[in-house]
Amino acid sequence: MITPESLTIVGNSAGAVHVATYLYRDAIKDYELALAPLATDPTLLPDRHDPLHPSGAMLIGMPAHFRLATPDRSPVLFGYHCPELFGKPGTSEQQMRELTEERCPIGLRKRSGDRTRVGTMLADLDPEPEIAGPVLIHPTLSPRCLPLRATQSREFSKVYEEITGIPAQEIHIDGHNHISVPLGLGLGGKEEAWGHDLIKWINGA
Image (tube, helix red, strand yellow):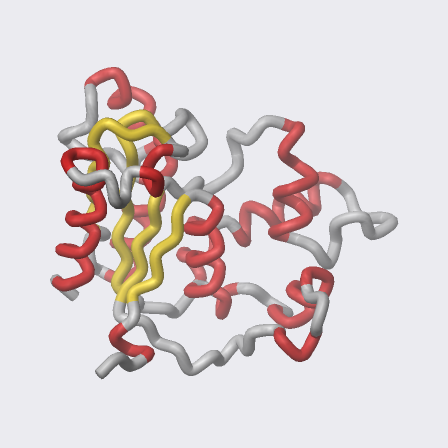
């Protein structure tokens, strides 16, 4: 029998940010007010106290913070992380940057009371520094990626462990770039090996 408690939520790239935002939404002050500008139908806004308690969540290729994002991405980041301020007269860029830092996956994880089991996956060729650096460092990753990942200090995984007392399992996706990961499913062989690793992780819950 499938129950909400038996579900695992999986998000890739921006989808992983969505999953983290959902899991750690209790850390967002004035949650409903923050979401209101994004809703075309206010009756569909998720409740802060949604009864769904998934058994786990896998965050694939997730940008865990946006301190290193290029300036041209600011409108998208501000529109997502602080929609109640974006475009509002009198709001400074610094205010929106600070709120984006608070509401990025790492910022939310630091303040959330959620204890959902979480893992992270990173592809061999995920772009640096925004994704490859902030998510994790794994001993099997190719040497060309290690210096930057080391300086980023496995930020999300480290914060997750500090808060929950449980290490976040980090799974390496061999031979893929940031775009090709979901496209590998159904191809067989090493292209979809990461999918089998994901299933093993889910079944290990």
